Length: 328
Ligand code: NDP
Ligand code: GDR
Image 1: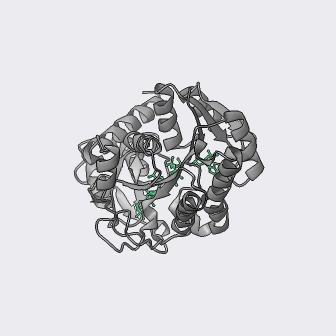
Image 2: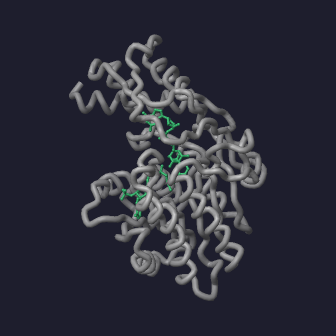
């Protein structure tokens, strides 16, 4: 039996990764924070076989205690404050969790593993936000990092700390530089889900305005279910390494609106969409498009869901959810 330990179990990726690992026969342990986490029931319902352990990335001793129980062969560090817009107003707490939390996770793993440091394989959830003001198009593992938000800066710290633990202690520590990935489980604060939920409500006559920020930014959006498969593949390699995971296709927020409204046959979406400076960011990441050829060649990984399929899947799921909520 292989044991896995996941931080960020209540998040989008934590749920998909748990499903993947349980289906492979893993014993899965998840770290859950807070004395009454509102997502506890969601995890219980979605992945009842996951064993939940309380703890917090900012509390090293809680991680040590959890590792003692879980005895993991693989540690997936997905926990983070992950909303970029929030990170400007909450830069310190973002640094504590998204940056220093990675150091705690690595150090807890090193101390737990003792003399057999490679006995626990470690995955760090790095991000395309690290490319920020992009220095190459498309972005690959060798592209210079130029983060544009406190979140991006925190991820750069976690990324290099992961490489440093690999180089200093010989740990099997890999970093996945994942581009945006979405699903019906995406948090409602992120742009894809905000749009697909609003489109569902507008098509059902439950809402008539959608207030947005910058419509020109471009992202490389993939499906979260595909991306957690890449995380697992990284930890099955003999040697740890860093990999870009992306689709290689980029779309603007305007194109996202086209696709989402198109899924409910609304062509003139401009009459519903308004812009508010409150949703613009102090510094924007204008263009993300990834080159995942290393992952394709070495991991045999490729995305299976297209942008159009992804947005249609999310709109369909939001339509079903909004109908159920409205009692239709
Ligand atoms: P979510 O925002 O959905 O989930 C974040 C998770 O982190 C939640 O389970 C949250 O738990 C947990 N968390 C927050 N603070 C702490 C803390 N102090 N201690 C322990 N856990 C904490 O993120 P995703 O699932 O989308 O992303 C997973 C990871 O991948 C994150 O690190 C994110 O930054 C990174 N990433 C995501 C990408 C994407 O497009 N989705 C792309 C690239 C990287 P709680 O419920 O308690 O708040
Ligand atoms: P991002 O995702 O910042 O790329 O980070 P998000 O969906 O929040 O924003 C994408 C782009 O959309 C623009 N935008 C808006 N964004 C939001 N949230 N709400 C709006 O109303 C809106 N209008 C326009 C943004 O300006 C931005 O350009 C995500 C997170 O999952 C990170 O944790 C992860 O590391 C990166 O993806 C890769």
